[in-house]
Image (cartoon, rainbow, N blue to C red; front, side, top):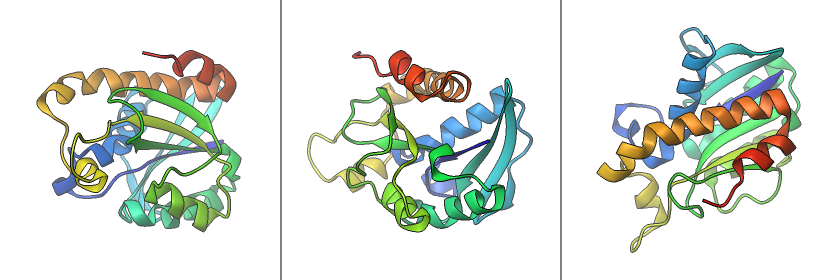
Length: 187
């Protein structure tokens, strides 16, 4: 069993923000794989899916990005899942918009959601699906991730979400190395 945590901020105010791309992807993955409605638990919302022979819990922490670890840790403990079977789907400033990267463990690149998960779970040895949102030309990263996608990005976003859902399916069905080989291509 895996826990797939899509990171974001709760509420309609943040729904279209770049920071919420993790929520968007987990919601689409649930639709594609017959997940029921998301239920409230673990300081978040979750549903379960089966992809081939693999079970997965899909989680959207409702603790706000900077405290995501509380929700993730509670779900891991309840389902008795080790951090190595956790997949975190998150926005990534260091990648151009729409670029996907599957990663196993490693640094946190200043991402407060990832920092919170490491602190709460005691490990950074979890899988990540990094979804590029690009860096702003001027200004601060925080303002960029807390703003909505541009009109041009919004037109391409459904394709990004579909490709990310495919990457998650490959992680579950083929393993992380195969998913890296398939999805970590130069665009």
